[in-house]
Image (cartoon, rainbow, N blue to C red; front, side, top):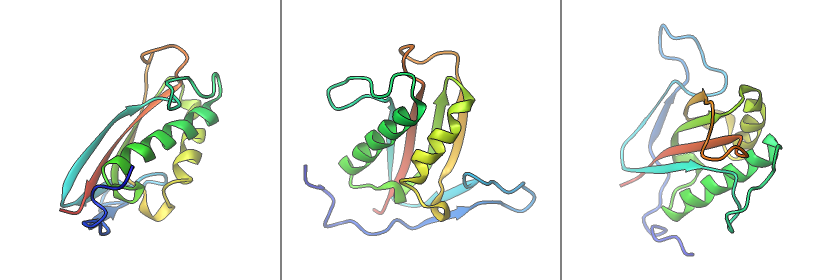
Length: 142
């Protein structure tokens, strides 16, 4: 699929504030990310391949890699990249999976461009085999 916005694509003007005055510094996210342009919301992505089959049963690393690949594909469908992401929300069944999620995130997002983020431990997701679901918000230039 070709990028429908390729002729309009320029780097988003985003400002990241890792630690506003009076707020403890964040080590794995930015406290504030702001920008102007077109807003993109990506629904929570699950560790499913393109045929809807689970990737990585009981394997948080494999599930995290698949979720970030799905996020990448969803962003690409709008003409966005991970550079445009301003917010990630991690829904996890077990907080011990966060290192695997951070490793998958770090494979796509450089440490100097970290978005705002929230991590929430949940009792259950839509199906018991899913260990995580991750959603993203992005801002593209107008």
